[in-house]
Every structure is written in structure tokens, then in C-alpha cells.
Image 1: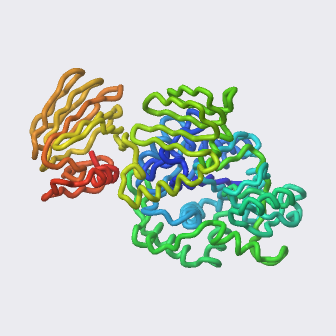
Image 2: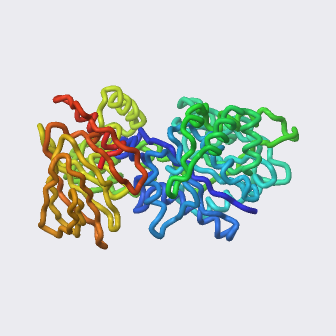
Image 3: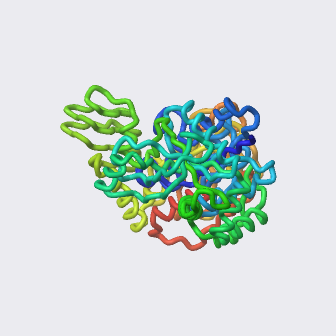
Length: 512
């Protein structure tokens, strides 16, 4: 049985702000251990080889094109690998994402797709593999399989699955799905828990590629048509597959549950066609959908606190306390969440943690950059951190990975001073090319083409001081770029009071 893991990597994780941002969502964060949630997801799927051998392929990843370099970096360097990364120009939900993957691999002996979100935590890998192996067998026989988590509490933040009769020939291993239920209120959730017939919806699925294509074509033909065209007209972009933008923009947005699974539940057992089945997944699953969920799964001290970073807690109990940038001191608190980052601090009651998404919505409506990105911005060549800024100046710390380089570029409205703090820099400045080592510096005048490259074996770290009338990241004329990024348009007539939000957003889209 050929198994093709599919990682759905398009979530935004707004309930975990301020750690999770639109341009650096929660699946790219190491929330529960040293590896990120994406890396842990890939490792779990790779563990299927322990029961399925070489018939389990490396994962196909479907992600937003804005995250492509971050995803690629996390799935390289000796860790879990990606067979292929499909890029969505914008989010359209899990049903189109799975359809793209199915179209991409269906000709490869029609494998069983095991699709799962990239931002969940599953504590017990062996139990996960056993459940997925059972589900894959059912999927190979033509069922569309989901995985239900036995509930341990009347949780109102999860969707539910109502399990029906046992699947014929599967014994107690699987049941037909009677219905999918949206997130309930507290009283309804308590009734679900007491009945013993309901499972939490994990968002994990197993289905043959051809069966999925048949189902999505039958129930949502417009999704299939748009995805088929987008993939057929797509192009290779380095190590990525970039689907055709216009075709994918025309695709309706929908989830796997709504587009197909709920329709399958309406079929009577034995009726021709695929049926929806559920396999129990009792493996320490959490979707880490809110700060309270992270507190639930983390190790706690004697006072019930989960603490990360430089934190001093006095007379504080049952709290989640995370400090990334400076000392965090908490006194006399109980059942709270306090998250500190370089540019934002969030404080909430633990039982109100789901409402953080409302704060993010307000920030977005106000045009605040804190909902989009961190102060430290990731790039395909490394990262930069905005240290300080004011009228006519800006200071950054730039880190360039070994062998990487920034684009060959020029600026109309700013000059730059570079000071090497660590490593060796190869600099192109006009017609010159030279090396800089630690404690050496150079000056890049306005209008002069330049490039910064790291030819060494250790990360290159420099301090960049920008000065000029306009410091927005759209004041870049990109002449050459090894990463295939689009040319940023220079701002010829900058406004004297251009908002910092505009500068930060343009930086997230294509700066440096």
C-alpha cells in the first residue's frame, strides 16, 4: 500500500498572538519542545515508514507562498524532508489544498493520502502511527477516513464527530460517521461527553487520491476545476511548485469537512460510492488552538505554572508565563496568560484566551504591523531585526546564513553604513568587490548598486544604519536575486509622514 503524507501548512494561528503572526504563524514556532510544530508533524508522518517501509513517501507540503522559504528551511538540513512544496497564492481552506495534492500525485500509483494540519501536537507517536495505519487500510478499500479523538472534557473550542455503526469488516477499529458537529456551547459539549458517542474532530484524513478527486468533483466540481487548472498551468520555481494565481483565486474556499465529509454522511451504509468512516485516535492530541491549550499540555512547576524564558513569579499559580526578550516579573496572579515579545505584551485570563483573536482583528483594522510580523523578520538568506528608528534613520541587525546573499540592489532615497560584528562579508559596491571582516565597516551611497554576501562557514552578522528622506522597504530596485523574488517598485515621491506600518508591511513582502 503506497502512502503519501500530505502536510496542510496554511493556518494563521491568530489565537496564539503575539507569538504567532500572519507572516510567521504557529506551525513555524517551537511551542512545545525544540522542534517547530511543522517539523514535528513531518517527523510523525515519516514514522509511518516503521510500519509501511519504503511505500511511504516523503511528504507533499501545501503552504502559502509567503511562507515558502521558512517552510523549506525547516524541512531541510538533515531533518524531515519534503518531497514537494505546493505554493498557494492565497488561502482557500483545506479542501482546495488537499485537491491540489491529490491532483499532483494521483498518477503515482494512486496512493493513500494521509493529510493532516501542520500545527497540532500529538504526544504519542507510536499510537498515532497505529491509528493512521488502520485508517490507511480502510482508505485503500475506498473509504474516506477521518480520525476522532476520545474527548476528555466538555471542550467548546473543538468540532465534534458523531460516530455511528461499526464499519463492516473492520470490527471495532472504525465506525461510520453519522454527522459532523460545529463547536458547541458548554451545555451541549457536556451532553456529548456524557453520551460516549462523540469524538473530537482532529482534522486528520486518509483517502485514496482518486477517491478524493471523485468526491470533490461530485460534491464541489468548481473546486476541482479551479484546482486542476491552477496545477496544470503552474510553474516550477526553484524547489517549489507555484500554482497559477488567477485560476486558484477563482477557487471557492471550503474545508474538507464541509465540502465532502458532511455530504458523505448523508449516504446510507451500503449505498454505492465512498463512505465516511472514523478511526479513534487516542495519542495525546491537541490542536494548540489557544494559550489555555498550550498550558494544558506543558509540564508545570509546583505552583501549576508553565514558565519559559527569563521569568520571576511570586505568589502566582496556574499561569502560562513566556518571556522572549526581557525580564518578566509576575506577583499575586492566578489563572492568567502573560506573553512577552520584543514588540508586544499580551495579558489575559486563561479562560478568556480564545478572545485574543479579537485583539488581532482590532490591530488589523487599525493598520498595526504587530498583527503581521515580529520585529525580527525572516528572509530566505537569513533575518533582520529592527533595533531602532527615528526621523531620517533606522538601525538593523542583519544575519546572513553561510553561502547566502542579499539581492543585488540599489536605493533612491537612503544611504547605508555596514559594520561587521561577526563573520566575513563579501561586498559589491558599484564596480568594486571586496571582503570585510569583524570590526570593519563600509558605506553605501544613495543610488549605488550593492550586494551583501556571506562566503564563510559561520553566520555573518552586521549592524546596518540607514539614513535618508525615506526608509521604506519599497525603496529597492532589485537588479538580481537568486531566490526569484518579485521586483519591488521604488517609491519615487515618498510622503514625509509615511507610516511605519507601511514600511514594515513592505518589508514583510519583499524587503532586503
